[in-house]
Length: 166
Image (cartoon, rainbow, N blue to C red):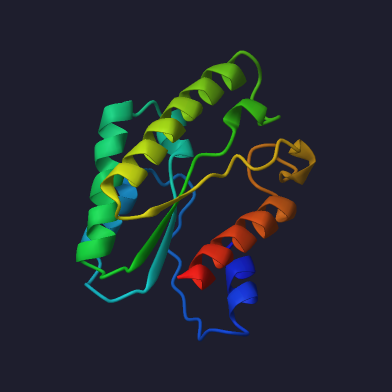
């Protein structure tokens, strides 16, 4: 997704970026990682967290507190002007998950996603980006669990549009 954002913005903006990502990250591990980093200044931060929290059965209220802490760290420690919070994808449509697990995790992710959107809108410190923009599972990666190039392209286009709007 980052490559798509850079591609779409680089003609009109000076783009430098830093990616902090690791397979298996939860909101809690990213909060710890950010707390261990030296303070720097960034114009924009895009978050994409929650699937690993849902699948590891982190409590919804605990996760909401961690998400709020994450937004606070980005704003206060890193001076981020625009925080784009990517919502959770539609786990109920992930082909790699067998039923009834797909239904259970999908329902849980939907509940997390609704609360996240409500929290982000209510606290006014970030912009929520709904990732439930397609139900076309052919756009997923071949593993049936991760986004494929088509989803990354759409996601990146939406992020770039939000950044350019600011």
